[in-house]
Length: 423
Length: 165
Image 1: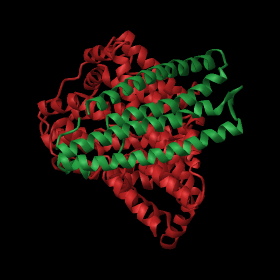
Image 2: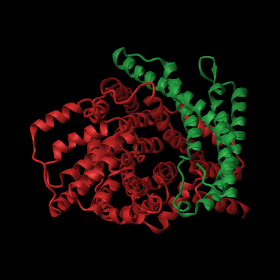
Image 3: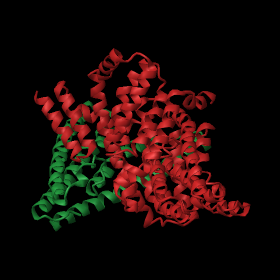
Image 4: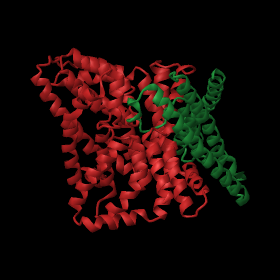
């Protein structure tokens, strides 16, 4: 009885804003205490952070992303995208989608995108006479649009927890990621045409000058994807190459950041986020270990099997459940706590863990836009000084579009698995 | 209270400096390993091990810094609509809770380090595991200090009806 009271109390503290890594840690401590195992079991699991060769990708990619965000590279990349897509109907909106996708993938879907690019792109949209509500919704939704592209941190974390090859997950996310971009892109073109937004004429010279300006940054995605699938380096090594490359390019070639003043600041700033994520990883490893010891996934499966028999229904229920998870939890805690619980269940229904990962991440991408804890809503509200409710209304269309894309991704597994099998 | 703030920011400066050093080492060494593997077909084994342990160290130092700037991931959807004073009261409670959990985790990590000392396990060559594991009790110790400062500052603000920075 008193155990339930403690659980209730910890849950309440979570809603009052206590740090989630300690909420998770408290549950882990409680679980081990109830089963009569010494509390040092939590620390044994935490220490395994130092035994995992994949985790180093988290600080390295985050650092690289922050360096890019703090330099002038957002402006250079927007210019390139403008030269390539500006002539299309809805051109600037496409620019928003493409550059945000690039930035989100590199900054680990941590919200840096809206902070780094929003201030640049939102006024530009308004200036080109896109409707205010559409512009706000687009910039807010774009803040997590690159989640499925390599080298996004949520993909790396999912791979870590599910023990699925990260290289394969990176491949699996590409087509579903493009589908999401297409959905939002087509809608943007539609809006652009309807609002009679003026179009910039296409010019080769423009492409040449802007590309030359961003010549050192544009090849980055290609280097990562090419390097990993060309067998030159692993996903972890890609992080090492990216961090070093970005540092050298921004400090010594573009000279956007000073090595002695800016870089230490950016390092500290990026490690704040890494510390916050790793703290959750550390305690969640303990909780997961307890849950598996207590055979919670098996019990969950038996419970599910009693009511659901077909994989089709299971996937539908799973999506509903994950959207609620995405509404309540941040993406990092959700991956670490929920994935170990649902993977065994999903496997019993014959769902490929790679496909499951893409479904999972797409759901949580939508979760970034849904109240009450949708991170993008709050970042947008802070950045553009608009009330949350106004922004929620602005992203509604985008949520619906992403839900339709989610259905395609869920029920056509080939979208996720085709590239994985082809390579 | 200003003494407390000074202490907190002094501690932050120290943690930040160490963090910058460790991350710089990580970026350079991780890159060199890739160059060695591809160019010379060999890597230095202890560098790989060191890099993995650096992740744990930067994680704890980053978490300590995140505490002072209140950047830990949490659910703030409900508290953000409260008045500043009510928020200070609730922040005092959640920070005290954090101190308690960190204290329990500190005790658990002391047990863990002691067990490692008795077991005599090593990371590489003669280097004992507990040397590196020492960051765990140190880390939780730092977290306790920072969360305590936050708790006191928030309690003070709640009493005096001020806004904490």
